[in-house]
Image (cartoon, rainbow, N blue to C red; front, side):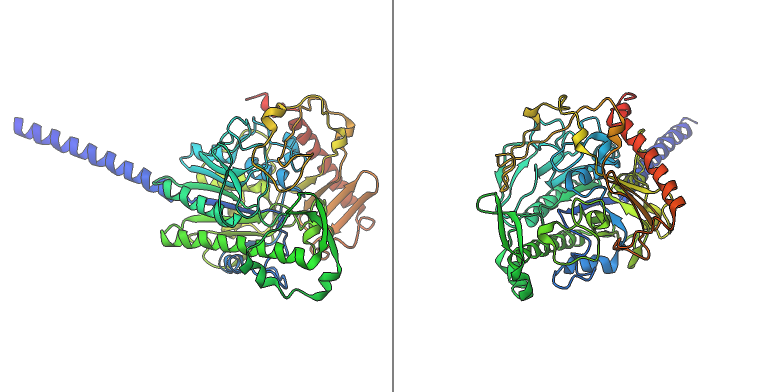
Length: 503
């Protein structure tokens, strides 16, 4: 009898141990099934500046290959016509005006909830590499990548060229030898290697192809035969020698710009090759996009109205590609309107993370990835806040904490560094509704200018925004304007810090 009892106890202990081990294995399996995620962003890389979008000169074989095997987001937009605001939208899933990131050089606010923090809570290793531009990257900054949830970062306050000077985890800036895009991809690969059993989340924001331009000889040689007609046109841009504005022939400027794009493309190829060699590619989602439209110094031709900084399509339409072989098994093109603010809700869904309890402007695009969404239900709103209304008397963060350390080629405000700004804005008035703004609902886009009136475009038939049809559809314009105004009310409540009161 005792022997039977002992055998039963042993069997029970073994069964319990086996079941616990099995459960642990299941949990580990589920953890491993979470996709690795890499967000890549080109700096000032406009929609038409890729081979797959038909550019006559630029060579982007890696992005072209991704477009042939992945999902092309053909109506993908940056949340703003300039870089800091767009980057903030990626991190928060919110329009940048909600937290005072009005333009380039405006920091994010420390109270914002970051996608990196959310994924970190879900078990991801998190890293940022390259351009940050949401505040200084130094250790004491309350808006550096670490404060926003990144375990590690090798980053720059702003943009960089060859042999970039970067800060590792907020330390003193150090020069890294090599082409800028390759340098940060090398660091990204090193981060992935150290992630061990955790799924990884890497945000890789290239310094290219933002001016001033600088390319390797082998990349410059690819563009030696640009049309002679470009030599008769001139553009102003930053001098690599002085950091001040200089006027140069367009052919030499574009030769360097295109060389930077090709080098960035090659670095992305290096990353993809690494993932393949480690059997990581199948379950890694790579999402590439630009942060705004083509800048004036990069303009050669465009089918769109206007350029970087504009509320028109030319300021905000950017390349967008998602590659995820285990889910996206063949080439697909989506014409669903999508925007950089959609990244956070989408990644939260993929990682099984609850959305932040505050107003978001992005939506979950997982149905688009799976070919189950043909039309966006919520409109996308854009707004160039009128900064003349900004209260500059109450800084959100002290100037000492907003002063960058990683050096620039470009001279800004008398110094070769970036100093950021953000301001408390607790009182809202009618003047705060001013600024160029637009709402995109399906194919229809309403644009409102404070001084010159309103414009309505059908982007399905007029993607270049050439024919204003507002007189033909006044009721539609009125409906869209009401929606836009209601959205502005919500944004201004956020700007006045109402979202932070419940936290």
